[in-house]
Image 1 (cartoon, rainbow over the protein chains, first blue to last red):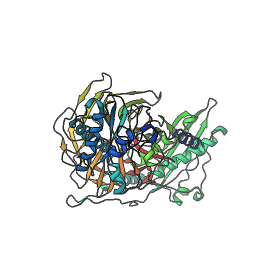
Image 2 (image 1 turned 90 degrees about the vertical axis):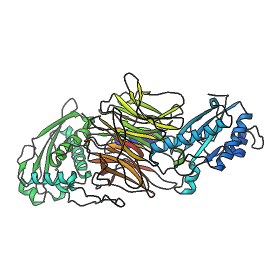
Image 3 (image 1 turned 90 degrees about the horizontal axis):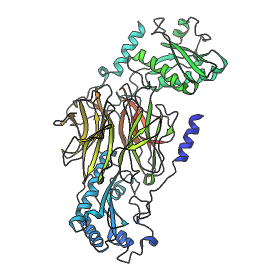
Length: 169
Length: 442
């Protein structure tokens, strides 16, 4: 009986909590989820808006299984991101590296770090100051697609560039 | 005499001699030979309550002892309805013929009392029914009534040890990650429980992702990784007080995969910087950090040998994740995994004889063990996603995470013994992952 009570208490305490940061204009769930709401991020047709960056340019690039190499598609997206950041210097960005669930937890953290860094290095090579970029790995902790098939895995193997107000870190 | 024989048989089953050999060339096979031994039948009449206050404890303690022994897969409890004798006094002589008639090979008797200050006292005896003699001396354990489960586990550990010749593991705890919510919005928090899922308590709130807690060699502290700062960083938590501190906070770096050295004073961990992950060691007292590997590949999941002389870890320096062993004081790593597929999360057995690991091959995950030189690889499980082995204190049982597939996939904690038998779900009712098994409690 004691044990059941404890379980219930723990479950109650385990309320889902999204991480929130007031200065952050990225995805709604704070970890590379679907695009943000129109209101705060402006209109996707306004080229200076965060919504334009997230949706029209694209805030994310995808990777092959166990790879951190940027594909030709990815470099097109990242060229757009770099141009936007070079023109909108009041923003900095956190690049989140993610992996799909086909891997051990620790390895996926390391792999996510590689992916985020590949994006950071590319943006820097296109003129974005490294002081405006930071990286974080989520490994396989924050998938956006939840099926256990390649169609979902492909979406989860990603690096997401999350904008925030501020000129640097 | 007879029980000596039984002991020998069980020791064989638990030890290496009975482990099936694997072909060394060609694809590795999965060896799951469940049910190859006949569990040893035992009888445990309800412990005698020596006073009224002890009645409920006597009943509950007897049940926990039986559950511990049955849970190993090595013992089978004879139902009470089959008994020909009752035990009404701890001192009365054992009617061996009555127990032999129902094929009980081991008999456990005991008595419980609770004194005026609420202190519990449990004494027990173990008998070899066929040789009609006690196995070992009677023993008495005491404790606060609130710790009655621990007292029961201590009795069961004694019985297990005397019959198998192995150390016990029931009076132990597990720290793990309690999970809740769908895959894309998992809430995680550290929790601790008895090895059998009882007495669960949360150790952190669920506001940040937490990963892979690891007990200290004495079970009083826990290392883990948390996103509390917004980045993965390693923390040290004191179990009794709940106090915690971040261990490494270098801007531009991320730290994870911490694990204690056997001396409890140093911590191995991974540090990612500029996209590259290497192994480091941190001295907890001085805060001095030293780098153990310096390679462009991923080096992570380090684990010390129990004598502290060697470190096993995973690296993709060959192109895929494989296991390597290197001297703790520096030196060239030596690859030890050579089968098909990828190998990760190696953990050295507390006995020093095996390394447990996670293996990924052809879309399946396995928990496996190998000798510390990589020989005698044996896969113990197979599923959509098994990972993160942790050793029972006696080095003969492994707990791990099994996550089910699909949108509704959820993680649970399982145990399996090192022969691949007795796969069981830990009877904890929620979702859990990343277990770390404590040493036996003092």
